[in-house]
Image (cartoon, rainbow over all chains, first blue to last red; front, side, top):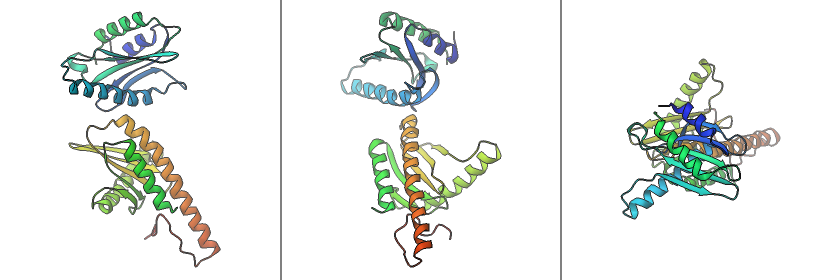
Length: 123
Length: 148
């Protein structure tokens, strides 16, 4: 089991990682951030991607699809943004957000590692 | 355009960007309404309460060594009340639904409060200039009675 700091450190050590955040999407506030810096303000990303997650949850409701979102992938010209919704009883309403540099990252590996980080994380 | 109209325009833009806002109000630090966008019927009392909360907030930040007042967030069972310092003599108070994205509320409101602070401070400067130049001039000001 790992705490928020360890989970974020693990996320930042994924190949190609630019920054990561653990976000509460009931409030849009980040519980923790790592990396980012001037090119990527992670608090802005937390608030912005909260709207993305909420919109997708609403879209699923309207489509009558009774399933849970595992992750959301956004592909940019030079980056991947991965959003992984946390499922454990104690971490409901949270998501992990990971920004990756496209040319340095392996998407399949990053997704796999993020899944493992989620499984280990205890909030 | 008068400062009131510009401040009101800023409040409306803010409400358009954050649909989950239920009210927006700009007030002077001493509790007078400068502009408001649907804080129905209660704008005056909200402005007065904001001034009181601002006083406590200021004392709290100063006495604990946290510097000047920046913002205040109160969460009730049915929503939020958030107050942001806007320049040296005004505040921005927002009412929001409980489902609001607080992260975005902060981002948008901080930006707006800076803008409103500039508008109010500039209007006050203009008024002071007018006063010293031509004492007869009583042009529109955002805060007709700052020192009651």
